[in-house]
Image (cartoon, rainbow over all chains, first blue to last red; front, side):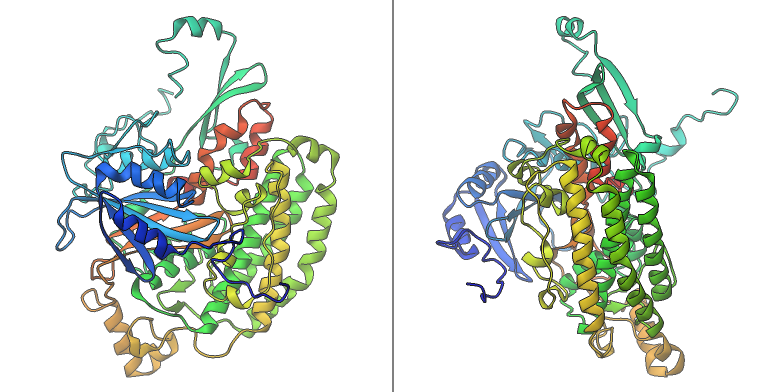
Length: 182
Length: 406
């Protein structure tokens, strides 16, 4: 045992080591799984938005994907050959077996609503708030879905592709406090 | 959340009339950076804390959609400005993953060296500032003097002390010089004694232990559930370190340990950071002594890495190559696909989710900032503690607002 070299991915507690392929095979049979592919060794699974919560719950509870690394979103408005407007990305990791998996959901206007995953991972709280702030995607069931980085009164969702980099003149309306008034 | 206490529930509000609200920040010496906390206090006990962030939001991710892969590295410097080298490495690690570039061994080792030096520098600030907040000023000065030496190394390495922008796609801006190697060797020689002094100052200090032990406890399951990574997770018993779990760059060749603790309190986070510095020093020592020869940039024929500056000025081929790569319509061409790549930054898992669209500009450059995730757990850690513990917990989390708000 002492001379055993360290092998990444074998950090489990011994016994049967579940390969990522097994998880993917099981996912193929799951309802709502539309597509899966790999790029540079990273597996992505495209899931229908109605089955998102059930799939993530199953991945967490049955397949020990216990860590939600990140939630983010991509606006495909100007992307060539894109068929959908938004792509949500849930990056999962299994700390036990050291595996990663990305779950993607495609969304279109006007149905920019997804179920929250804060009930599965408490860490999703701020990540979902950021996606709401930056892209305007609502998370149903989120207990505190407020803007997080932009001010409360901000009207737009700045990381959308139809929002210009220079802004829309929001700064002109900032109240100016001079030294005499303060 | 600040409104839920008051609005709608008047009967409860009356019962809670004795509660005070305290506004902590955004400009407060003990927050170190621009962040704000709304604390609800019962006497000196913190009942609730609501973080309010966004004061430093500068749209880094939006800028990432307009700057090319080599230009954006200057923006990553400004994310976690305490360890910009680690951010540079993280950004180009992700870009190279997207482009499918494998950098030469010498570049891998140099990147390991700079990110481990950044790790030491960041931990010195994190531990030092935490000590400063709870009253240990000498400790902080010891740490900052060593940090100054790391700045000197970076200065002779790439010309900049603070915002380094050292990495490039497929390589580095310049190779290491014998002078820099000497400086690193000097640092390796002197640092262990200082680290020992620092530990003597604080690790068994009664006041420090009283202020930090048992404060802000995070259990292992909570740490995983709340996506916590890095030294904070390791202080809670999560044995996750990307340098070991997903050995990128040259980490697979190097011998080092992961430092963990099970206590999960502020003191454990301090201890993990102190031990990690020693391990990082071990990595730097091995890497600098086993530095492979050869080029630092990928072969110019692949048309991915910028050619050597000497070649650009002296040969026509180099000039053409440089010109071709920097022209807006004939530079790098990223595949139309998406990639997530992360490195173990001093604060935790620093990852970039990059979407390529066939050009040399990212279609989307999402940064997974560890500080953002870590600040979200702050209310959970501070509830029930004294108001003086706020600074201890904040210090132990090492929140960098520029990375928090981006």
